Length: 255
Image (cartoon, rainbow, N blue to C red; front, side, top):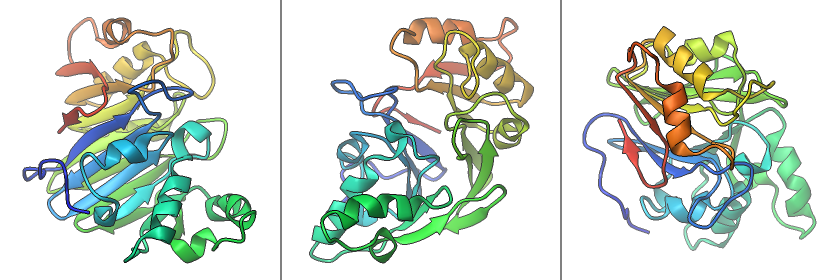
């Protein structure tokens, strides 16, 4: 399948594939992002509906790596769709997949019900750990363990001096500071109206972005009762120290 979207121009970019929480809605898949630089394509989180949206921009045969931040369904269920694509492809690719410890064996329970191949046989299965750094065709990916109800790993991507960070689901923690420090774009889960364990409010996201000298804060994974307009207003620091605050929307590209 040939590339359907425009080629990235030089520096690293991130395209929003989905933001919905905790379930997909019409025209709005769950969490998923496409990181691209010249020669590299990384699918970060595979929430419900994101694989269909991904194919508007790249073919599955062009994906170099898939990053699963954690195993809540709204971040990982389309990994099953990717599995089906690989096992039915005429010329299958063994895509590199990073996920929390034990991710492949957990998905095997679904595959084994149909007598299918194990996930580690279909994918180049790798496990994330805090501080892991890997290279994908010139894009450096670093994992940090963040504060959520299950093992979860945020992502810092760097290429030619350009930095894009992704919080995944997380409450306030030091790892988020390390991920976001000096990022040109920070895609930050900030969907809750009131503080709660394992998630951020827009205010907390704005404070973090200010403290870390983020160039552009992109709010994502908003709860159904939190509008984009409200989230942006609540996240924007009073002194406007963050260059730009916006809310993620499907098909928009940042970077």
